[in-house]
Image 1 (cartoon, rainbow, N blue to C red):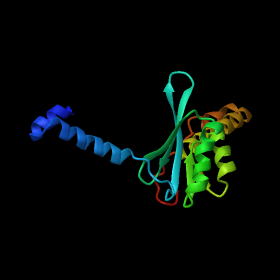
Image 2: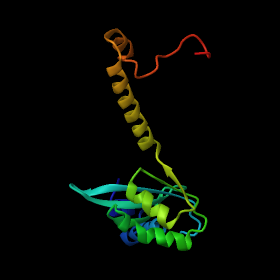
Image 3: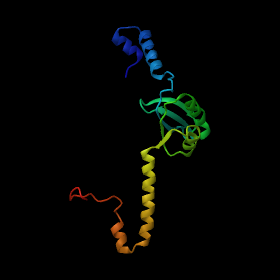
Image 4: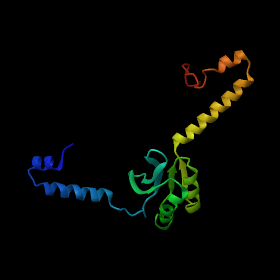
Length: 165
């Protein structure tokens, strides 16, 4: 919340000292870390510009630190880092990801022994879509009275009669 000069003035030290402390802290926080002990990785992408330009990040799920970033979200973009993981990350147990086909097939090809975990958000999205599709198809088979009973019953009504509900 303050400039380097503000901090230096407050601490009654030189600007260079605060700048050097800041640099050392950033170097320590963002140094290239060995991947040999990584056990759980998350893969995700984000847009870097409006349109269709993306970056893919690999995150150590134990501490939340980004261990690699690459432009793109294709299988071709992520393969080089996955090959590096195969050579060095011998303790890798699982990779969490959305349901991207490119990530899935890249991990499956390079690291077939590593478990793939799909994130809950995407799994629940598919489940909800399937339930909605089934309900629509089922409603078409019902008469008008039965449709009214089913309408609005997407969520199970709360039960107040005890644990046997």
